[in-house]
Image (cartoon, rainbow, N blue to C red; front, side, top):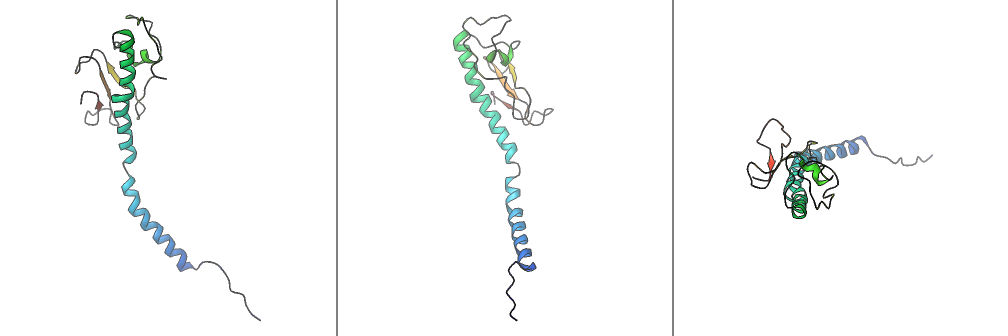
Length: 138
């Protein structure tokens, strides 16, 4: 009687594959750690220096002034109903009130304390520390 050859993997082959996958993971995972936080910082910088800044400049171009602190960035998505009323509001300039990548509102002050037009910033990941703040005056 001839016995057919059984197909499949041996325990040694399976262990070898597991060791190779583990070694690759050990080399790749540390390189990827921290990239998501770095991406959030870049996204906040893009919002502050480009997206929101462009919307604010369009608002100022249409109305002759930036929205005051009391109206905040909401004035970019909804026409303000408090003084000073924008006479040529052609918004919405942005789709919604901007939220930073950490889920917090951007801080907006107009006229600015550090710049003559407006200050725009995010507290970053550490809300109680200024070391990771992202701002348009830095």
